[in-house]
Length: 91
Image (tube, rainbow, N blue to C red; front, top):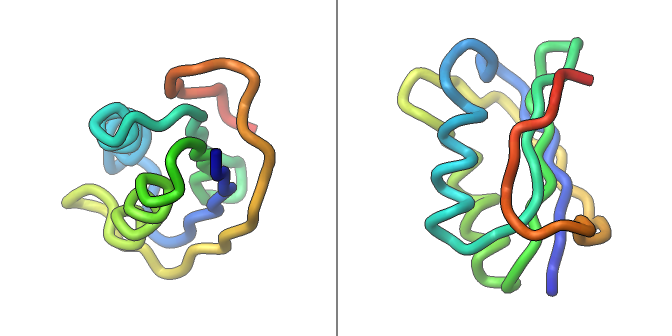
């Protein structure tokens, strides 16, 4: 199992990014979570098949229709303890 943590910057809050991420992650069979951060970025932990993790990271470079992604910081991480993909409270 592969896992990555993404920090996505740009116009990524108030554009449906979290709901979009839940939908895309479900389609790809990924586990993890997504949350807004107080600095205006969105943070995502994605885990699953390596190809699906890479596809989700690629999709996040564009995001939902109203988003304007400026940059993504990607780091390898540990998979979450729970299966499924959820929205967490703002951190």
